[in-house]
Image 1 (cartoon, one colour):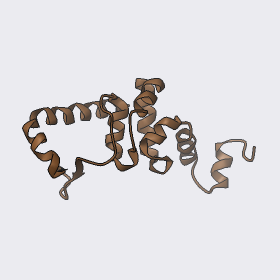
Image 2: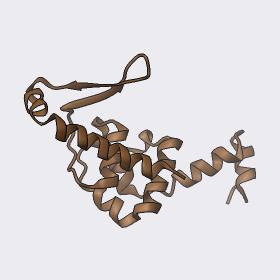
Image 3: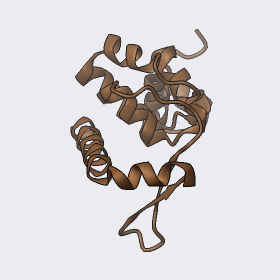
Image 4: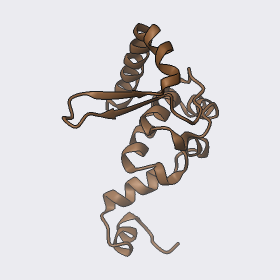
Length: 145
């Protein structure tokens, strides 16, 4: 009841109405999804926007059900959690066997694999590659307007 609209709220916090709009939209995300990500401090405006598209395209019930399969999402990269929320095919546990980062040139993804997992991953590299490709396609299809 302090502010009657987003413009007043933006003035109160000395920010733009766009930021206020994004913050209000992010505040409506379902609690199970925020928990799966590892807490509200990991929800940036970009993540909130992606989640909103995911919730719209797949549905709240499905995404929340997938969220309940994720254990300790705080230890996982946001992209991994978003993929698990989208496809629900994997029960994601904390602790990484594989870490993905962007190479210094910005042109390549770099995989770091735990030694205990390397032999199994190498023996099934075609399946591993296909799984990454499938996840990337799902993420890309969700993030399109």
